[in-house]
Image 1: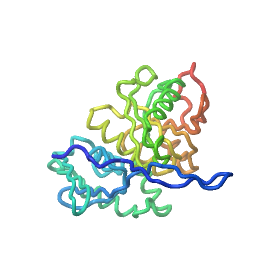
Image 2 (image 1 turned 135 degrees about the vertical axis):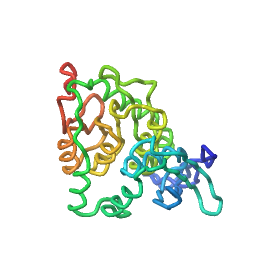
Image 3 (image 1 turned 90 degrees about the horizontal axis):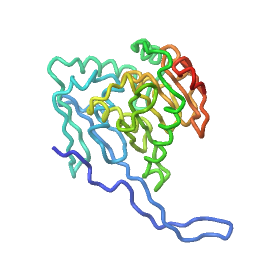
Image 4 (image 1 turned 30 degrees about the vertical axis):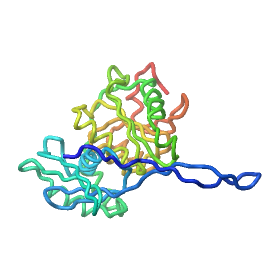
Length: 280
């Protein structure tokens, strides 16, 4: 079984920079973009456009955050192959009696290739998610800003190209992040970046119920729903949430914070998750 994609993630390009003095020659790095086919039980389930690398984590994370696979225990085998004629393929063999086909049917009923479609679909997605039952004071202010800083330092592809999103995940101990559990992943897709950290965490046996996740992009309804399906109760981002995302987070009793920049942040849902001495 292949475990890594050896394709270079960036490539240099000779180009020109336009400034006050006109055009000057320069060089920029471009991020790679490739299709990844995910097949489950011999059936093609989805094709994702993604940044090469961590394909198994991406596929497993996608299946979990989309609600098709319930846990790592429902996977008997997962195999990555690169087909020179087609591209990258991850084939998943479900464990016996895993109800993935019924979940896939439900998933396809409410999703299109562009995401959630219509208020009825939104209501159906929300109805399938159970509210979290998490303790108060489970997070410190330091945890939020420490994870944001660690995510920034873990984005080499963004520094090279400016073309990637990132997600960072870390376990929590006494309200602070555990640096040894830190996972940072980059991808051209913000959904893919989240799926990659979830997939890695699941394979590493990290309990997602006691983690904090940081995203580089906005907090949309889909991103909150994906985190909730994975069992992540604490979600933060450097950008803003949508009204629908805040509504979902509040209904699910998730901690949701945006605009995590410098030493500031805006808490949109479950402020009681913060330790009393760590109010933002």
